[in-house]
Image 1 (cartoon, helix red, strand yellow):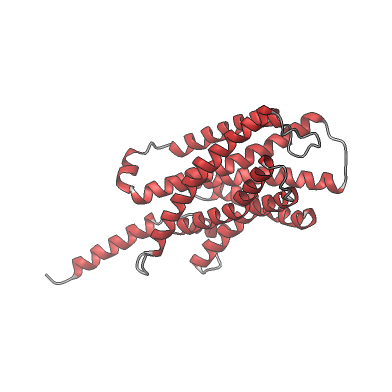
Image 2 (tube, rainbow, N blue to C red):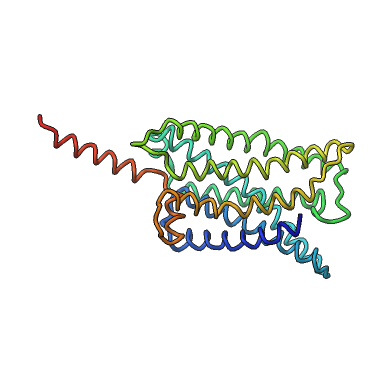
Length: 290
């Protein structure tokens, strides 16, 4: 699994660096690109941790306890932040589509920044509590049978499976159904396609591993090879999003533009297109004979 994951992680690191650079310096920021940027940073931190783990596996070496603590926490914070921020992105898009007038008139200007800051902080606090309750993930003395570790696991299952994941699935499903009702005159926004693809990948790789881990945690008699599968699935899930954005944006543009143009196209929410279409319709109506 690790030998398969190593080249994927290298490609993922390069792809995430490109997306972070483009969203930071090349592409105009919107309330949605702020979320995508922070999801990409979370995925990048996961890949850095996994690549470090892969190198230590291939060439074992001693590292200080403090360095080990830091990289373990980086991984945990990255995993949780990716889930939380992706959920809020889906919810914001759902509200902006189905309650457009109310949402845009009541939405604070810097709400995206507030949300991502709060979610990163919340992820850090949860990861710290989980870390000291159960010990690091890859340590041989991982102690999952203590009462405090089981309480933290219940807390995590409640927040992830009963709050965040249902909100993500419901919002994405509603967006997907709306996409199917679009006509050729009003094609779906590329942002909706990107969000749907990202959520499908997340459900296929991240959530499936979370379910297996939860089953194995609470039912000791069931032995599932979740560790090796989780390593590969984490790598794929954290690596694939940049390339999906480039493919979606490139397919919609059908030109040989730079990659940042493909990324920008993949994250367009359809406002410009719809405004142009409405303006064109009004001009055409003005030209009709009275």
